[in-house]
Length: 282
Image 1 (cartoon, helix red, strand yellow):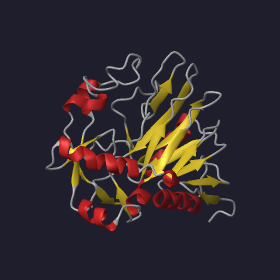
Image 2 (tube, rainbow, N blue to C red):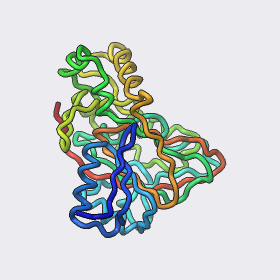
Image 3 (cartoon, one colour):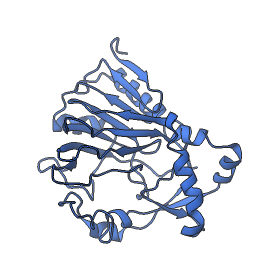
Image 4 (cartoon, one colour):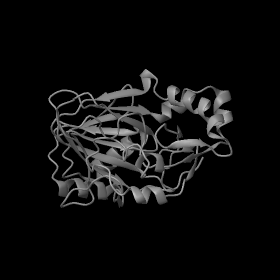
């Protein structure tokens, strides 16, 4: 085990890991990062110097890379999705609380995001802890949710009639809407048993969850809205401010995130690699 690595658990969600170089991880350091990721839902790093090839190599240590179907990709490295906003664009990608890839039948494990170009102020990402969101519910509500599944979809977000396609300034940041139109709507447990940690986590989100299985949208919405509000309790949230060299690796099964759109007139470019996951169980 490394004598230099330090893991600082943050009060909201996640842990900040210092004393390592992500380009040259010893086996013991990698295992400590993996454990912190499993336990806390997101891990943060500062002062890293990852090239695109380093970014890919790091992701491949955690699993197979998911080639993003809807984000514009890096011209030389198709494994890297571009999450950017130009000074003349008003909308950003990833604004609003959500977790990624719940619209897949085997949702992604997580994503590694590397800061490439940052505004002088703003542009932070907020994260919320879905372990804590579940733990904070009453015993009665936990019991009621234990047998529920929910239907998820990407069509209303990435499809040809979706939010991004109809935005006035997407500027080709979101592509391949036909693929979204053709996706089926997977069903996942509302409360999952995390495949790494074994802990229970709340697994619905306002971006991609449509309704409870066997319920109408109208019947589902009041309870979903209650869960969404419960999931962003202030004590569950970490507000991560990006700096040059910052890296965040979040677990889509145990966290939500929300990219802040508070830097109008400035550019922001992030490189994202998503790692394949597995089917989820209650």
